[in-house]
Image (cartoon, rainbow, N blue to C red; front, side, top):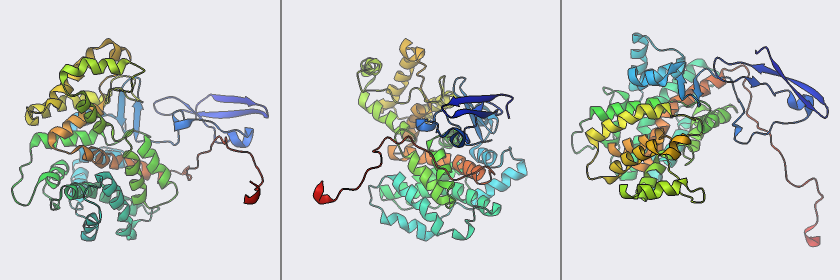
Length: 429
């Protein structure tokens, strides 16, 4: 509790709003009793100025370009940790000991297979179904397979769910990818680490040996770390809101996947590639940069700037070096989009207009380029995002379920429709 309160004065008198201070970030004014005391609601479309919960998981300072997972700077985790270790950190709040990490890693590795009946569900999808449609549908169906361990008030059931969804989502995603290509499904391998296993399920075929590239596995692991959580974003808030009803956790995660599918959220890196294809060639950069500066022109440079970060996206700083490393090792010399992307990056970093408005390349600009270089189809970019973000969704769901202040989500509204009116018989209208 802060030592200061806020007083709101209205027609019916005054209301004192208690103030709370977090570990980091601005104070919040408690408006929960505002309606009872003043008969008014707050109005905040998009909830941009509303704290919907208390959370100990992730902190963002957009002005300073800071991203912390459980207090640890994402830069340190990206340099020193692994995705599986970050999963443990987000789920349990602390970095694991060697024994704890080994046990957790083994548990994830040995739960990657999915029920064969679930695997056959993919044959019910049309061949050109979007992979996100398949993944969200199959994840939702998991409640029909694991209903014996879905008591949300049972701590052991919650842990089983959290391990199960983290372990199986890459297998589900790879099955969706293989179905879209008409290729055989590839089973997971317990001897491989998380990112290497993901690559072999996506890209190996029964007809020949598949050699996992160490740089590709390193890049995937880094991308998963950088996308693991990002505070109360749209999909995370969706998981919390759906989960607040007491629904089973698989349904809550499926709702988060559906929210992530939106082009304003998880589809941004796919939009970057479409933009690069529209620009076409490095010789056209100046023309399109001028279009981006013209407020009357609908063209926008995708992958630049961020709603939260008013400085350089810290994830972009990290991923930029990996992007260049991947292109040096795996990039195809005959693909002009890579050259175009690098040239556009340099122009934007030096252009006075973009520097002044702090429109720096963000994580979406680089991640799409990396995924393309690794061989992923653009339709799979958001699926990869979902694989990474699942641990964040689960962590927030767990936190919400155990929060003593937890209530079902029920936003209010400013009603602007007709006032009460009487029904008129159809013959008299």
